[in-house]
Image (cartoon, rainbow over all chains, first blue to last red; front, side):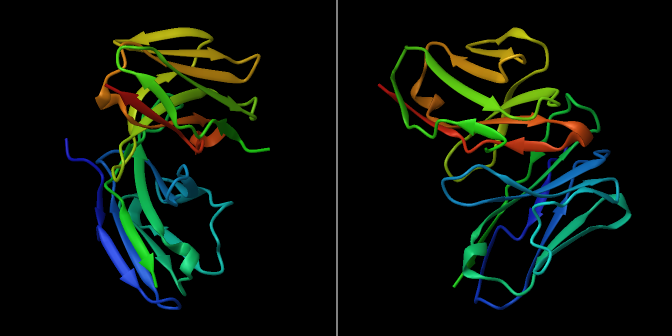
Length: 114
Length: 110
């Protein structure tokens, strides 16, 4: 079974530039999560999709971050414009629907804003 | 109050000893609880999940859940240097929202 795929693995941009991350979840997983993990902290949920609908985006800084999940499969997360404090690892995870379902993580994208 | 509280550590344990990690959560609607392990520079991977009060054992790992006290713990028996990592507590509440704590760093010394 193929895992969660993310790209790119690393990205360095200047502040005020834009950047996009891509995620391909495990086939059949209806739930998709995007997390931001700052060094030394736990993952912070940015947005959760169920199929192609948003379930929770309460912690997504909507003035600069946006996300979509086309056709309930792949997802993209965009930052525009980036700030220095956006430097973090962006993790995508997917799971089957259900309370006991395990979330599987991709390798993450390490973003550095300079 | 944070939704999930964990001691950040580091928790230093000698090889072969028991490591005990604790986690408290604030959402009484939480239904499932997870322990993930994260090695430095890697993504989290699931160790165990538990949803009923009591203990659940899997190899050297035991998860304990007390919903009345809003408390979940993880015991690692016969700790090995390869267990050195950050352990993340997480819970699922309504809508399958998966919320993580800040993690506890564990160092197992040979």
